[in-house]
Amino acid sequence: MKIVIIGASAAGISAAKTINVSEPETEVVIISREDSVHSRCMLHKFLGHQRDAKGISFIADDFFETAGITWLNNTTVISLDPDKKTVTTHDNQTISYDKLLIATGAGYFIPPIPGLRESKNVYGFRDLIDAKLLDRECQTAKNAVVIGAGLVGMDAAVALLERGLNVTVIEMTKDVMSLQLDHQAAAAYQKLFKEAGAEFILEDKVVSVDVNDVGRGTTIHLASGKAVPADVIVIAAGVRPAFNFTQGSGIKTNQAILVGDDLKTNIDDIYAAGDVTGIAGIWPNAMKQGRIAAINMLGEKLLYEDRYALKNTVNFYGLTTLSLGNINPEPEENCEIFIREDRHNYQKVVLKNGIVQGVIMQGDIGGTGFWQYLIKNKIDVSDKNKDVFGLSFADFYDLDQQTGEYKYAV
Amino acid sequence: MKRIIIDREKCDGCLNCNIACISAHEEGSNFYTVNLQSPDAETRNFIKFDAGKGYLPIFCRHCDEPECVLSCMSGALEKDPVSGHVQYDENKCAACYMCVMNCPFGVLKPDKKTRTKVIKCDFCDDKPDGPSCVKACPKQAIVVKEVNL
Ligand SMILES: Cc1cc2nc3c(=O)[nH]c(=O)nc-3n(C[C@H](O)[C@H](O)[C@H](O)COP(=O)(O)OP(=O)(O)OC[C@H]3O[C@@H](n4cnc5c(N)ncnc54)[C@H](O)[C@@H]3O)c2cc1C
Ligand code: SF4
Ligand code: SF4
Image 1 (spheres, each protein chain N blue to C red):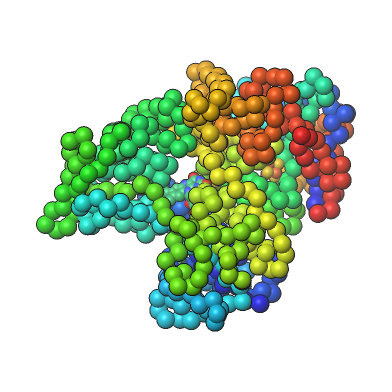
Image 2: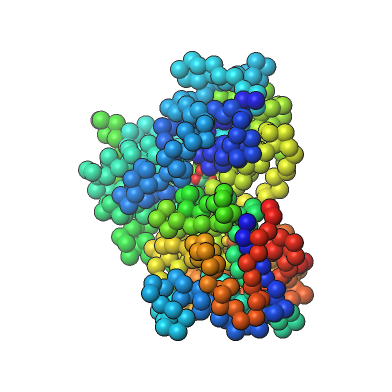
């Protein structure tokens, strides 16, 4: 059997590894647009000059050779034909498959703001090439503007600050990382970024960008009337699943490639995993989906049930935060909110009818892994009769006598 | 693979396993000289007390399907195909702490001092005489056994 995987990142590589371990005789071809395998989550370390390109790889140097996998890099898939079971690449190769995995992730999106798309010094922060181009700009630029204060924008800001640029972050909402944090937790990060030299313009919107005669954006105009000078602009205003090449193939999409719990698309023998499915935009889930899709392509039946996507960890300037679930409930949701804080910690637990809805743990996040299990599985904690902040796996402690693995007693 | 098997009823909460773990990861120290006040003093195993159930040892299971490995974005956490143990490479780690979030049993933690690495059971690097915590337990509440996967 021949399995073709489009995409050599979290989902694609995890699928390839799984196939290689379970059925090493299966022929695997991985196609990727990029010429390196790297972890996007470490792009800021590359741009900040803490690691080189090799240092942000997440596989062994000889991974493809050792696994006997063919890797077609610098190769973009432009179309696919489910009847003939082939994919076509930008350089006119036609590659046949028995099973196909689409693991093409997502790409950044530049909003249609006058001047923004046209400016040559506007960059996303998604692929290594983006970081390389930004790196080049950093050699001469003084003023950097980051549009969007989500996790990706803040990653870019941290690296640009590291490189000694003046960094201004512009954000529409009233807080940084507003999907992951509440006002207080966000303020703690904002303070650290400010101490590192960043400026923030919150609750404001870019309305236009002045472009000079060599095509570079020079001034960013905001709805408030403010104008911000820019030598280099990073756009971090969201991503879109990348599946242009499926047009006309009959694969069902709705802003993402639609898959069932077996991660198969509506077309037999075509699977999808990772950010391209729109299920979750984070690394662990892309890895898990890649693994499960691979097992299913090999003919077994395993379901992807981990659709819980509201989870993240943040670590900037040594301040760590765990964020899970609904952390900013509306009053009409009638949730109970518990808060505990001291000099080093800010902790918040949102409960409804004994079930944990959301958690913020800022400061010490050691041993907090059990919270995700409680939220995901909607476990009632009211019968524990204890302070919510005292909960741990010990409250659900059980062991499998045979294997010695832990189980949750619920 | 070898796993530390727990008999919780035998545990009486003496915390010798904690001290042995800290000492094993503190260069040049032993059970008697270990500096428990040092900012580097971090235990990889935990004993919790529950009024109903008594002492509950929480040790990394080196799981069959380790969630921590599946969540690692740098390749720092890998399950060794031979020993079955989940090993951690500090040099690869990017301190994103997705693994801390994903260990369902709350075993993992960032280092206290720098928040640049993860504190994780390394099975004492598969030393021939076994993990230090097991040797230090006076009650045989934790013992190494071969388990089939
Ligand atoms: C700056 C940044 C920081 C992040 N930090 C974190 C973090 O700390 N923790 C976390 O959990 N997540 C983080 N994420 C999210 C995480 O990186 C993604 O969830 C993850 O990379 C998704 O993996 P994927 O395999 O689905 O797709 P991607 O990583 O997007 O990879 C897509 C692959 O497909 C290839 N490709 C795309 N189109 C084509 C085509 N037409 N033909 C051929 N090849 C193609 C690409 O070259 C690439 O190899 C971060 C993301 C960014 C951008
Ligand atoms: S750290 Fe947690 S998930 Fe990872 S192997 Fe140990 S017990 Fe399992
Ligand atoms: S903190 Fe380190 S070991 Fe843990 S998931 Fe992130 S990179 Fe991997």
